[in-house]
Length: 141
Image 1 (cartoon, helix red, strand yellow):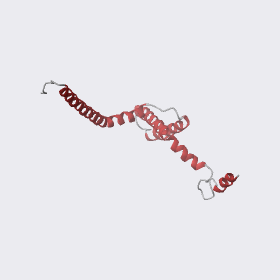
Image 2 (cartoon, rainbow, N blue to C red):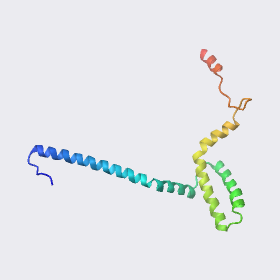
Image 3 (spheres, one colour):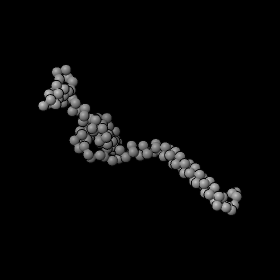
Image 4 (cartoon, helix red, strand yellow):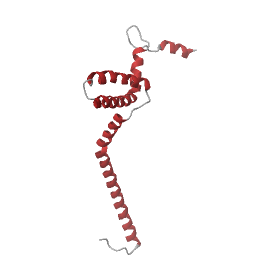
């Protein structure tokens, strides 16, 4: 296998050889772990989606209650009105859970859009911009 170590130079050479082998093994392990993580990514995404269906986010009470009322009206009393009792019980629960997580994720974007609709507007319907002339006059003082 390897020649026997007889001198200090043989020992130093053997040590360098083993350090190179160690670095190669570390790189191989990092590569395999990265490959394993990429292989598990679809499972992680599936679990994340399943978690959204099974748990409810309670951080946005007003938006979630509006979505819950809409789901009850449209899905439970409309679309599923002639289905079995178990379906009418479970499907709205899953939809309410998912919608609460969806609302929590997109709340900042939706609130910004809502406030842009109801914010002050010019006569042409666009958002008011701060006047540059006012800022220039304040800087001169």
